[in-house]
Length: 377
Image (cartoon, rainbow, N blue to C red):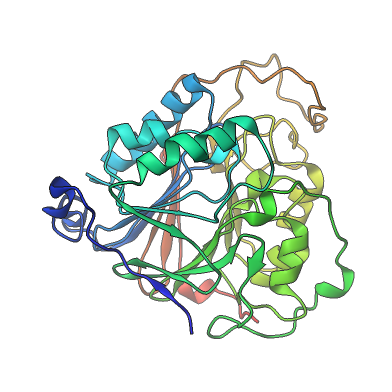
């Protein structure tokens, strides 16, 4: 039986006195709104249900200045959504570009429910010190859950299903899924570190609209989840995509789920390699690929039109490269800090499956209607 992670009252009187839904966010809202926040190649994705309840996946980068910058950008999205608290926070895994802003965020807005996959499995003194000394204090007056595949996270108006966590995947297909996955036969395993495969991944349904965010789940775990049978079925919008890097994003996942739209949380020099872009652009039924940043690793050869890109390069270029730039190798200097204006990509979904994707940088928006949906496994 699948376990449900129901929200409980938090210990603090100030939080306990608040109404269930975030009343400010619930005013006249009819759509599920998703903000893909620019945290410079990290991850921060904010979901706000029509009820006003919220789910934030990850909190950006770990360096002190970057954490302050990234949390400022998350807070800007929260203010735009009318939020006065975060109801649920998932830290997908313990890499600095995913949990980095957590302590800073907790200073700025109440967080009711902390969710993660459990202990860090890729030893790192800074991460281990954070988990031992800081993290328990952050959730001391809230709820803390170690997620397991099959759990549900209670967000009023949404169905939020945990499909991966701590290296495990769901064993029973989601409703309507379970068909044979034809891409399994040609799958080639990839390399990965220890922590990425631990990612908490979720599949979210709002009426007829479906989306997924799998953290930094790697190719090998994609295979476990999707082969020999597709346990997810299809999605309308695939989020995150592990920044568009090639240790993830295999055909067994991307092609089998038939996303109509994919949104990459990449950086200027992180993600968007040609082999990943080829997988995405050749995915059956993909209508558009949206990017948080222009990727120099894609160049102009594999990128998308600028109207689908929220942010440019991290420093001015004399000319935009046509050919892809090689990915930085070990020991390469860090990219220049991008501390200026940053723009999100926002998805607004309706219960009938219609959704609109908007680029905050240029105001370009595109609406996708349900009658364009492909059949899924």
